[in-house]
Length: 109
Length: 118
Image 1 (cartoon, rainbow over the protein chains, first blue to last red):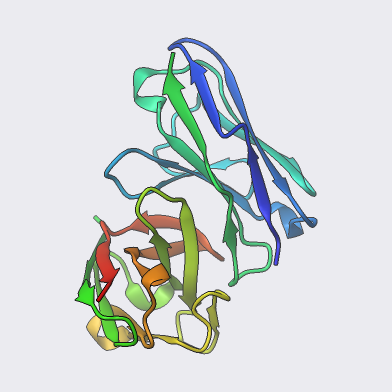
Image 2 (cartoon, rainbow over the protein chains, first blue to last red):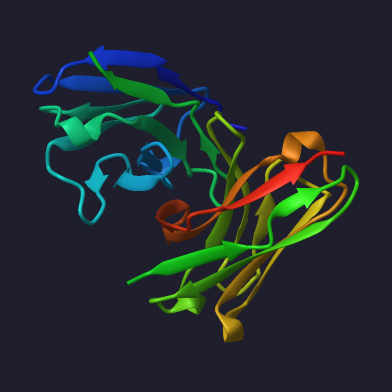
């Protein structure tokens, strides 16, 4: 089973700042099959990025994903107030089996 | 508009069974793989199980393997999760999710809460 480790666990930032979240896999993720989700309190997760760098429908272009192999990142170029949430990465290279990272909480400073 | 509506959760004693359902609408259900993902209170996401569009491929996470059965009825646009021998650690909000590609999950329901307690 591929284990995903996200870092940092919590980030405190201000609107307007740029942020990069990290997701590291214990083994190579096949074909860059990695996704990023955003979850706000009391809501279901929302798909932001899939296949490491493809924005899902409706994802603002301030969100970008990159990486391959075992190291992946999600970058938000300029934080908006609505971006403060928990972010999860997920690998599906061993699809249909898949695993999630433990999450990174982005909070307002 | 894609809609996924879970039901069947509730309070159940350890060792008992529960069947979760997910009613899908707004898309061609039998074109897509479907998955169950759960989230324990205050915790992260845990993938539970997935099923291909034609039910030919079914997989389970290690934590539920041997105790859960996923199924679907394409004629009824419905997904199911039969959960047996429930444990306290199965307590979670269970989400039904549609796969966009492989297992990137682009639509989610609001979840149904399962609480396992005596």
